[in-house]
Length: 152
Image (cartoon, rainbow, N blue to C red):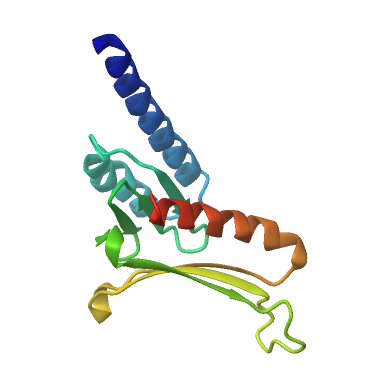
């Protein structure tokens, strides 16, 4: 009975390494300053050694990223050089669906947000939104993924 357990552990480790590689591949596609790329390749890479990533998000505008781990989340902010850590039990998901409203002033029809209950300067606020019906399935996919992670 020992080998299947070892095989399962090896599979989990291989899957985690695959997610880390996908994460770095997505980061490499960003148009971010060289200093931010170095920060990811040195500081964040040393943090990821031995960590299993369940999922991740990358913000192409800011270069920030969110790593979803088994019991927590890590927010990487290359602009400030900060890495924030949030216990999963302090993270919540908020979904604001404005598609049925007749008039939405800012044009956002669907917004999904992961946020934390933590001190003001350390709060997590990771959001995705859309202004087009064509983008709704992608935002719904993210919401489903986040809720699945939160409920595991």
